[in-house]
Image 1 (spheres, rainbow, N blue to C red):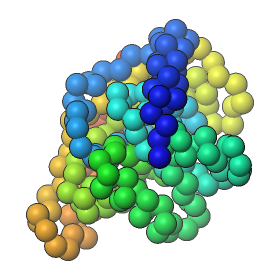
Image 2 (tube, helix red, strand yellow; image 1 turned 45 degrees about the vertical axis):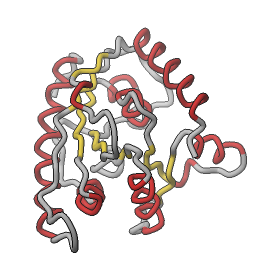
Image 3 (tube, rainbow, N blue to C red; image 1 turned 135 degrees about the vertical axis):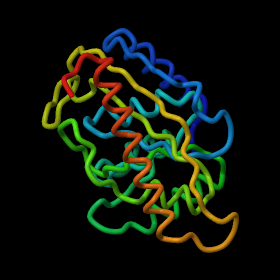
Length: 215
């Protein structure tokens, strides 16, 4: 369960620090649903993207985090209090999927990186179907998000965070085309994934351009 007061304090502190250090700008925040569950699908180019995706949403969120960061004891309790859901990226982690579905059923927004692992380069390649699958099953929207500049602030392999402008661009919610009840056609999941990929690419291009990063 998210510790509301602690979460909000950390959220405010992170917003202030990122605003000062990265000149963070969030574009399109008004497009986010103000109530109910939805899946947030950001581009993933840096370890900072977990923090940035959470900052972009005014409400507390849940998010998938690689299981290797869960080391036991106080660290796990803190991550859980911040909304983290462990996922083993080496398998089809059904436990993580069910945890996401439970969070969505409880009304939480959930961050799922559709590229899976961090990637490099300007092109958003083929996406995993995870975000689309969750959205189709729950009959809720996917909100695509572009993050520009995070890879310059903390590239893959870097242990240090650099001062660089970061811009987050939030897209319009994309609703799945599925029956109101019953089984979700596999074709609907694939079609939603394709729409999300196109929008994530477009938003990433815009975010990178606004952040002054060649893309």
